[in-house]
Image 1 (cartoon, rainbow, N blue to C red):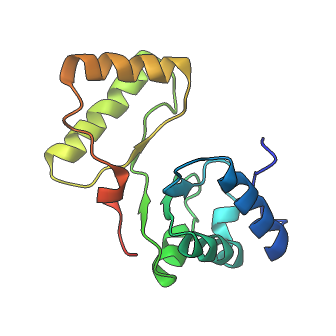
Image 2 (cartoon, rainbow, N blue to C red; image 1 turned 120 degrees about the horizontal axis):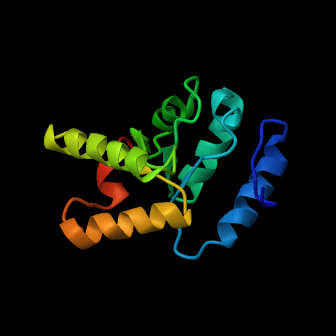
Image 3 (cartoon, helix red, strand yellow; image 1 turned 180 degrees about the vertical axis):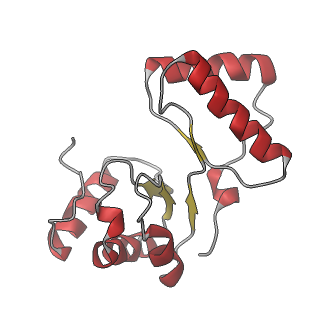
Length: 152
């Protein structure tokens, strides 16, 4: 946990201060996402505050969809914030065969012409897997996440 972790027990002012302090740590930031804090994404009022900050700072929001009850996309849409939601979790399981299966799901998604947001962690296993994939296939299938956004 970092000092910039947002959670459902924060009031509006503390959430704002924490968000802005965390944002200041990331140069050239264009968007944000949730990863930890699944419960926060279920809370309409808290997500409204987050989306107001995103709109104020001209940031997009990627919902990691770590909760099936997430209201993040609804709040982003209501507040005219560009957003997308994760379709595939690359490294839910760090075993190479599990990541390969997730990768194949992403390839199938792309082959059907769907937008497909894949997220993962900066684990050494994930980085090694991605390096191996891109050294054999190239980076042609990657596009900036900004091209997958809705709304805004």
